[in-house]
Image 1 (cartoon, rainbow, N blue to C red):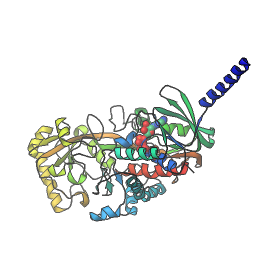
Image 2 (image 1 turned 60 degrees about the horizontal axis):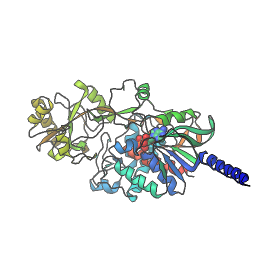
Image 3 (image 1 turned 90 degrees about the vertical axis):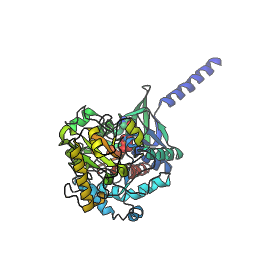
Image 4 (image 1 turned 180 degrees about the vertical axis):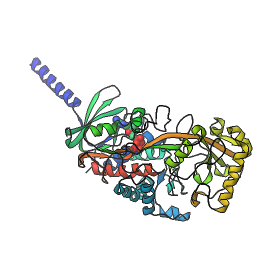
Amino acid sequence: MKKLLLVACLIVCLFHTCAAAGPLEYDVVVVGGGGAGLVAATAAAEQGASVIVLEKMSYLGGNTIRSGGVINAVNPELQKAQGIEDSTDLHFKHTYEGGDNKANPELVRTLVEGALPALQRALDRGLKIYPEITTATGALWPRTHRLVEPAGTGWIRVYSESAAKAGVEIRKDTKVVSLLREEPLAGRVYGVKAVDKAGNELEIHARRGVVMASGGFGADVKLRMQHNPTLGPDTPTTNHPGATGEGIIMSQDIGAAVTGMDFIQIHPHGDPKLGDLTGRASDFVQKYIYVNIEGKRFVNEAERRDVQVAGIIAQPETRMFIINDQNGVSDPNIFGDHLDELLAADRVQKGDTLAELAEKIGVPAAALEATVARYNELVKQGKDVDFGRPENTLQQTIETPPFYATPRVPTVHHTMGGLVINKEAQVIDRRGEVIPGLFAAGEVTGGIHGTNRLGGNAITDINVFGWIAGTNAAK
Ligand code: ADP
């Protein structure tokens, strides 16, 4: 009898062990706990789906949390109060033409029309913004909203809280290594394979859908050089170390199509030592100019990012300074940096006169004085006949001391290319067919920004397409 009991126990134990080691099952599996992933997870869970987010790093937020956090949306209520005329047609035109007409117009239309509802969704969930509308670097029009919380932290706080409230499970230190599809290049995507920190292999099945939200590949030197050989190991980047693009590759492995992989955005505002965007004395293009090491302006500071960067690359030593006066200071700036800390760390220089500032940064004083005087004259005339800066960024002179200089260099920022999706955020295969069960959103996708992304449009992208992907994956 005892023997029989022992055997029975063994069978039960064995059954349990097997069950525990079998695949986990959820309605929706989200790959990546950055902006797009957390938005998608929230959308899916709020519809009642069981959702897991798998994040390979030990932290959430990806590139989103390191960004300026600013979001573009046509928002008549706030824009009208500042006398700004705008429309979704104009946002479409700026986005599409600002990317050299290389985006999928249907996706651009979805982006611009979804922008305000996406902002409203986040406000309803506790996001806080300043009422003043501005123009992000390379945004081409004043429709940018700034967050009260620094950098992209507001987005990650709001959507990790919302996800938790809706019952989403989040596993960090869990790297997705491949997608599971019924046949190698056909049938439904039904889950993922992942590896946890201890090296354990996991299989996680998705009853309804998988959302690929693994971000871009700006931190992967090999992959980015494959698409732009000039971006070698010495080129700085704003990206977090996890932006290595394997989400794109593993989707290609099961048949996904990619587009625009060569379109890699370089940002003109890199910190010379850190490569990131922190540390500037002024956030507002309305309030600063750029000068080269000869103390001369060289580009329209409100131009597309790629044009600004081409401008810097044409200058001696490929570097520049942002120059502003006391009225142009952002303290703290959108990254949460305080001016006194930046001055103490020698990341920003200050002069009571332009000549003193020029000496500190090693540019000829007479040239800097002449450049600023000329710029002030152009502001008063209301027309930048020198570099064509638009009137809505030509409003404030630089003449109230003290004066400030922030050194900046070009830095790898955003990979515009990636997985082909349709406006339902379904991933498309190389034959042009929808891949059942696979959705994607955010920097991992391509076709939304063309050759050049407008500043402030990435946050719009993760919110609009993250929500669509999560909603559709949960169906
Ligand atoms: P997006 O702005 O599109 O949301 P982010 O860079 O903010 O992009 O977020 C992407 C997230 O995906 C990052 O947190 C990154 O670490 C994560 N990630 C990238 N590859 C994997 C992977 N293979 N498995 C799990 N998470 C991943």
